[in-house]
Image (cartoon, rainbow, N blue to C red):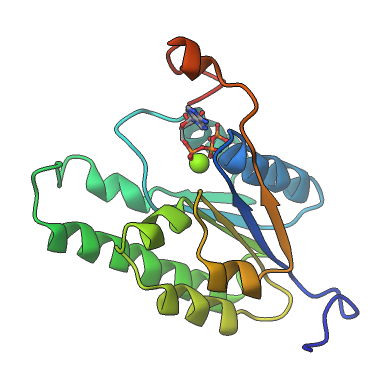
Length: 182
Ligand code: ATP
Ligand code: MG
């Protein structure tokens, strides 16, 4: 087994499952880490056309927090009718950016938000994600969010939490709420 923890090593953390709270758990960790003067980068792989509150509030935490909406490339440039290759190209660019940021050692924590969905949809190969985890400087933590995390990613992780839905107002037809869902 690889030596871990003793040298203050970073962790590979996965937030997965069908319940709400994966991205917000990652954001909560970022808030905590920045309070200790740590540098956090969050790369969003897939996001809809909504304006998420964290895109604005993350600016208040600069330079400790850097938010990169790579998935924003999906919005505007690409609509649902666009060829699959375009989706793959943009997801691939996000993956390359993620690889650069993790390797650079410029951040203590790199959050790859919704990357598990990108893998599940076949937009990025799981080998690409595993490559990033393998090339990670030992002091850097990587957080991967999104449901249906790949088995190989779960296997490689140090910490995995599965959010399980017990209730969600969505089931009662309640629409997404500003400040709670986006
Ligand atoms: P959050 O961003 O609130 O932490 P999440 O990251 O766990 O949620 P995603 O799978 O990324 O969830 O879903 C993104 C959007 O869907 C968010 O607006 C979130 O609130 C909402 N959502 C999450 N879980 C559910 C659910 N079980 N049913 C309906 N909507 C959900
Ligand atoms: Mg999410």
